[in-house]
Amino acid sequence: MRRLTMTMTATAALMTAGMTHAADVEVLHWWTAGGEAAALNVLKEDLAGQGIGWEDMPVAGGGGTQAMTVLRARVTSGNAPTAVQMLGFDITDWAKEGALANLNDIAAENGWDEVVPAALQKFSKYDGEWVAAPVNVHSTNWVWADKSLMDELGIDQPQTWDDFIAALDKAKEAGLTPLAHGGQAWQDGTLFDAVLLATGGPDFYQKTMIDLDPEALGSDTMKQVFDRMGVLRGYVDDNFSGRDWNLATAMVINDEAVFQMMGDWAKGEFLNAGQTPGEDFLCFRFPDTQEQVLFNSDQFAMFSQGDAVSDEQAALATAIMSPGFQIAFNKVKGSVPARTDLDVGELDACGQQGYEEFKAAASSGNLFGSFAHGHANPAGVKNAMYDVITAHFNGEYDSETAVEELVTAVEINM
Ligand code: GAL
Image 1 (cartoon, rainbow, N blue to C red):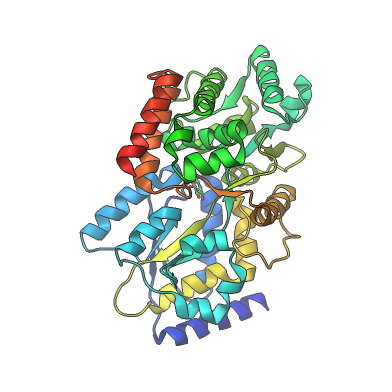
Image 2: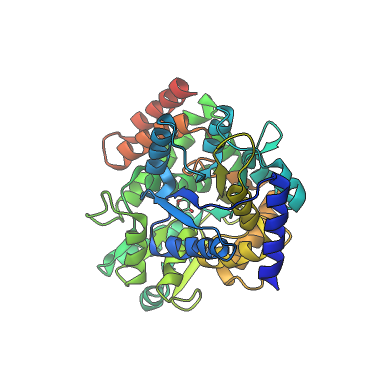
C-alpha cells in the first residue's frame, strides 16, 4: 500500500513537472561507509521500484569536503550531476550561483512547507524558492559508548565534563583507548563543536559560531575551549592521524576504545555490525549539552539540466520526502526524519530520543546548526576555522595562539 501511495505521488510530481520519460539519476554523494551505503540502498531501491536507474558517483570522505571539491570541478567542466548530497551553507552558495533547479511545484504538491521545520527550510530554500529536499536530520553532539567496557570498568554514563574526564581516566588506566578519534579536520571540528557548546553554553555557541562575534571568538572562554580540546587530545591513541570516522567507530564496536564523540551516523555503523542500542552500545548527549541539539541535515539539491526540473529529478525529490521513505531510510542511517509530522515508533531508542530532542530544542531555542557540518557559517569561514582547530589539536599552536588565529581566520574569510 505504501509503495502504491509513493508511486502515485511520484507520478503526480512527474506530471507537475510536465515531463514524460524517466532516465537514470546520477547522484553525487559521500556515503561510502557500511552504514551509510546501507541507507543509500534504501533510496536506490525506492527509485528502482519506480523504474528509475541509479548512476552512482561516490566521493569518499566524511563530512563531504572532498565531494564538494569534485562537485566544483564537475560543474566547472559543464558536467553537473543530476542530484547532489549537500549540507547547509553549501546549498545556499550553489543556489546563489543559479545552479540549482527550482522544486517549488513538487514542494507545493506534497505540502513540504507544512512539515519541514524552519531550521531546515532556511537551507532547503533560497530566496523563497525550494532548491533542495532534506532527507534527514543528524545531530552531532552525541557520545557513543561501548556498554560492555563501561560495565567492566564500573563507569556510569557521564553527565558533566568532570564525569567524562573521570571516565576517560578509568579507561586509560585499564590500558584501553579512552576516546576513538580520527585526525581529519572535519572530525576535529565535530569534537570542537561539542566542547565549545559544553564549555560556553548556547549563547556562546550562537555568538561565536553563528554570529561570528570577534569579542566572543577572542574571549577567555574560547581559550578554555581550546584547553579542553588539548585535554581530550591526551585520551586519543597514537594512530589517530588521518583515520576515517567509521574506523574510529569500529574501535568501539570491537571493544578497543570506550567512547567516540560523533554525529549519529555512527549509529548506522553499530547497527550495520549487528549491535543493539542499550545492549551493546549506548548513545548519550555530550556531557553538559543535554539541553541542546547541534544539527546537520543532508539534503539533495538538483542541478539545473535545462528549463524545468527533469522527471527523474522530480521523482527523486518526491521519494526523498515521502513519509514511508523518511522512516525506512532514517532507521538505517542513524538520523531522524526531516519532517516533524511522523510517528517514529519504528525507530530504535536512540532515534526516538533524537527525534523528540530535535523537536523540543527547535521550540525552546536550543537548536543550533553544527559548525563542523556547514550549518553555522559558510564554507570559507568553516574551512579557515578547521585549519586553526586542527593545528591546535596537533600541537602546532598553544591555546592562546589558537584563539588569536581563530579571530584572524574569521576576520579574513567573513
Ligand atoms: C556528515 C553527513 C552524514 C555523514 C557524515 C560522515 O556531514 O551529514 O550524513 O555522512 O558526514 O560521512
